[in-house]
Image 1 (cartoon, rainbow, N blue to C red):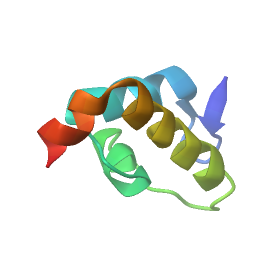
Image 2 (image 1 turned 90 degrees about the horizontal axis):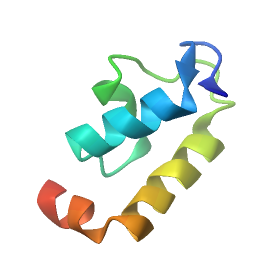
Image 3 (image 1 turned 90 degrees about the vertical axis):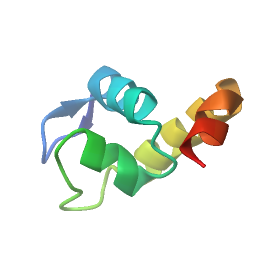
Image 4 (image 1 turned 180 degrees about the horizontal axis):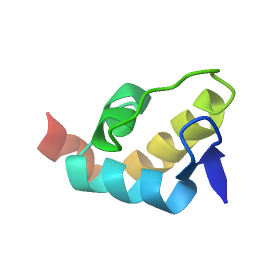
Length: 65
């Protein structure tokens, strides 16, 4: 499923890039995808995805700090 239509980013791509880069926030995850938010409609879903990653992978947060 597409997470960000403006950048044609699928949720799996976004999640994988965020995990690989250890992104702590939406901006970091978009940077890991070599993209940036445009219209903003995806930001709520993207933030929820990052929060879910932090909750399910606490080591990801520690490694990023």
